[in-house]
Length: 175
Image (cartoon, rainbow, N blue to C red; front, side, top):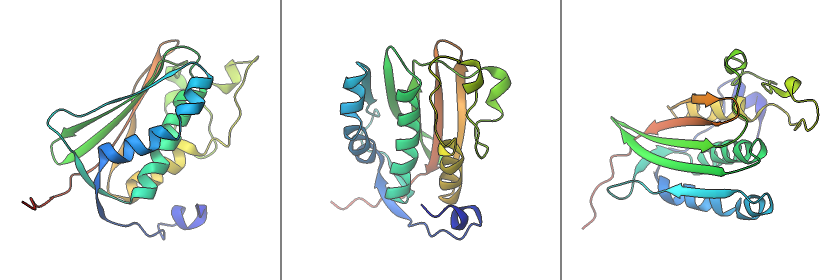
């Protein structure tokens, strides 16, 4: 991923009609081994009413999901990660919920900034190191596709829910 092009808004984004359920299912497959190794569940709650289509760049949507699911697994010791899709107005919303450590309120505003790992300083024993760029990159990618991303809720010791939304695709019925 070319960070400087992304930051300067010079990255190219495809505008494809994406079956979001398919993109989520493909991405989750890549995490089955990691999830079972930690004895964590990985669940996709399929949307009611069938397929949800969004406009976006498949590879970049997968990158966002990889970052969110990866974080969920990284910071979860028991339980697991659940991904849900829903339609909200003219957007398709993806929610990634984990049963992990949660993010302390005082650190939540730092989450989507460059080089932040909120809360790593309060865990002395098993600090999980990373670049701290996953959420920052995810924010730039989602915004580049005309969407939004946020921490919807988080409770220390109970887990977090991150959501991102993309514009809904106007898919023509081909029957």
